[in-house]
Image 1 (cartoon, helix red, strand yellow):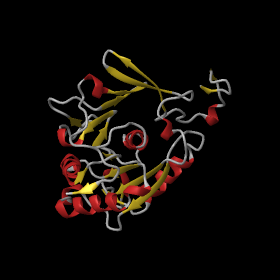
Image 2 (cartoon, one colour):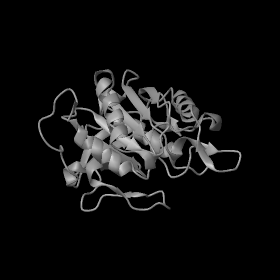
Image 3 (cartoon, helix red, strand yellow):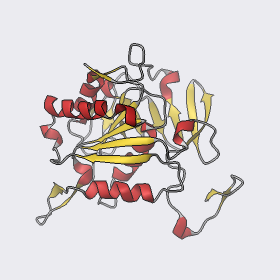
Length: 262
C-alpha cells in the first residue's frame, strides 16, 4: 500500500510498489524516554528532509559494497559501478522525499585494510572543503577498519553542526541477498534527517556514535556493536532517537555552523 491523496493507505499497482516511505521521518513523540519518529507521508516532523533541496554528499572510498566478481569469481572493486547504482536508486525514489545526492568516487578505490591516517585526512579534507554546500555527509567504505576510520574522523572534525555517517556492507550491492541497499538507503536518509551533529556509523538498523563502536562479527549482518553505550538511533517500523533514553548527547563543546579540522 501507499498513501493516497487524502493520506490514507490504499492498494497500488504491484508494478509501482517500491520502497515508498523509506527514510521518511514524520511524527515525533516521546515513548518511555525514547523520541519516536514515525515513518510515512503525512509528516510534519523534520522539515529539512521533505524537500529535494536537501543536499547530501556521498564519499565513496571503496569497500565490499561496490565490488563484483571478476573472471575468476573473486570479488574485486569496479570503478563507477556503485556510483551508477546510487544514481539508479535515487531516480527510482523520485516521489519520495529523498535528498539531492552528489557522489564523489575516489579515482583509486581503497581497500579498508589500507585505510590509515593519510586516507582519514583525505576524507576529512573532502568534508571540510564541501561543508557549506551540503546538509549531510555519507562515507562508504569497507567494514574491516570502518570503526577505526569513523572514530578518527570524530576527533578530526570539531564543532560539527551537520551529520556525518559511515556505512558499508557485508555483501556486495550486486548480490540478491545483500545488506547494501538497506544500509545505503537508511544512511542516506539519516544523514539529512536527524539532528545528530556528529560522526556516526550506521549498520543493520542501528546508528552508533563513531567513537563508541567496534566491528564485532565478520560473519553476520549485525556486524557492529557499541559496548556500554547504546545506539544513538535505531530503525524499524519507526526511527527511534534514543538519546533521550540515555543514548548520549552532543559529544562535547558548543556547536558551530562550520566543521573545523584539528
